[in-house]
Image (spheres, rainbow, N blue to C red):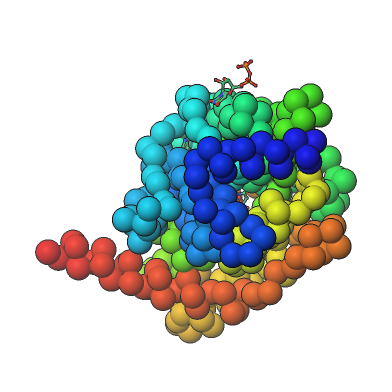
Length: 343
Ligand code: NAD
Ligand code: UDP
Ligand code: UDP
């Protein structure tokens, strides 16, 4: 299997006449679906920086050209407006499959489209991986654990998921995507990698995407109350985006299929998160309670021993270190927005 893949990629390299990067490694051609989105665009930066060719496939549902505009004009970068629900023909070495809205507000907006993206989109990218012998990485989610009855969550936990709820298009969609990946792996010898990503934050998140970190940060900057849903005692673990990107690359380059939890084990209640945002942005910031959404998981925290041991990866950036990087990006964008309104 391994040898087959190496053979295929070598042939592709010579066909396309791509030159080697550095010593002992030739330049790879890599597809990033969802590459104009929050996580995808940071991943693209890393892959371009290390000298590879990147093709972004994105339908711009939640992604923006602005997130990748700094690569326009680079001959190693290509942007294709395409919906992964439709088939596509490309010749590539690796596929990072991220295309899927990630914020609950976005994925519930058109749930049928979300599940089509997760099922048909993933099927198409696996079909592509099979045809060209590319390695395929799925960005799955901690949501596959549902409202977990095991805490912290290990990869061996099968989850507690409502199959008919408002979140199902996303969490059941990702569970099916994992199933498809494993079936292509076992049945068609596709080299797959599965990451289960826990809540991630950082620059370039959509300002109004409804996720808690982006909401609190934007609210505190705009001097609006931070909206705490429910009693605010539910917990999440927040990972800075550069830690995630390093984990995704380590997983893709490593020899293990996974699934691997990629997240920061630091666990915060929403009330604690609001306190940290207050410390970092504005000590006079206030909170306001709102009713919670249906099926909201009560707690979430990754057990990352598997990734530590097999990928030699662990997150380095704490919430208090990471937040300020996101704040300056949000401040600039909110300022531009306000200036736009005045103009
Ligand atoms: P995002 O919404 O910023 O990015 C998703 C990208 O996919 C966007 O650019 C969007 O336009 C594109 N897209 C959506 N549907 C598409 C389709 N049908 N065809 C082509 N492109 C499409 O979200 P993100 O936070 O960057 O998340 C990226 C991936 O990571 C997603 O698969 C998400 O499920 C997963 N993930 C993210 C988190 C997180 O906290 N950020 C947590 C768990 C899993
Ligand atoms: N596919 C694609 N690009 C490719 C190869 C396949 O988009 O380069 C799509 C294909 O249209 C199909 C899916 O991937 O819908 C699964 O392909 P596979 O060959 O595994 O299955 P089949 O075509 O036999 O159903
Ligand atoms: N949340 C909140 N205020 C907001 C947005 C979200 O208190 O303005 C809560 C939400 O109820 C959930 C947690 O924050 O318990 C994380 O929500 P998010 O949408 O960021 O991600 P999830 O982990 O639910 O996918």
